[in-house]
Image (cartoon, rainbow, N blue to C red; front, side, top):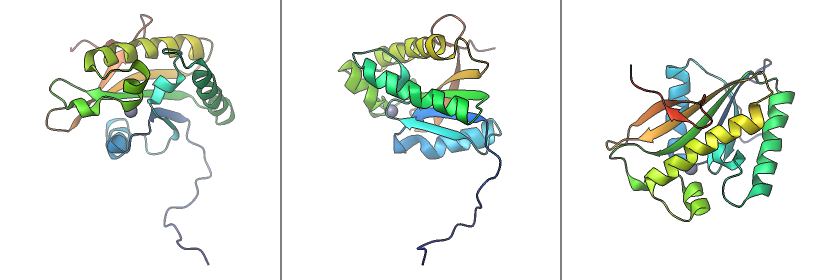
Length: 171
Ligand SMILES: [Zn+2]
């Protein structure tokens, strides 16, 4: 006997969006909400690892980890015919709690200075774009989940055009 039967049924069609985000359980409900209500994305493939897209980057001294994560990513891109990738980083926005600094970055950089972690995340987004996606016909967006003082999350898009992620200027 099964212990549970789902109401939601297996999807025949694959989604063609892949979300790369941190495993941190404190921001999953919010990511789902943003995707559903902000982007209209209901279903998506997931590559959730500590550090999110940071696990793909060669920063720090963990080249083997980056290689492994990148090969998992390229498998999904090819086998699941991914057309659009969202790289989701997280950390405190202005006035946000220091505890929302990505723990994987704090481990990798051996400090949790929010500004310096953010700098590294921006550089990593650019590096991942250049190294992994340069020759692929995939739309890639870099998004930062900024935890605010009131603990809501602002999702901020960064421009990947200049070799690192640069915060979009307000219009
Ligand atoms: Zn994290």
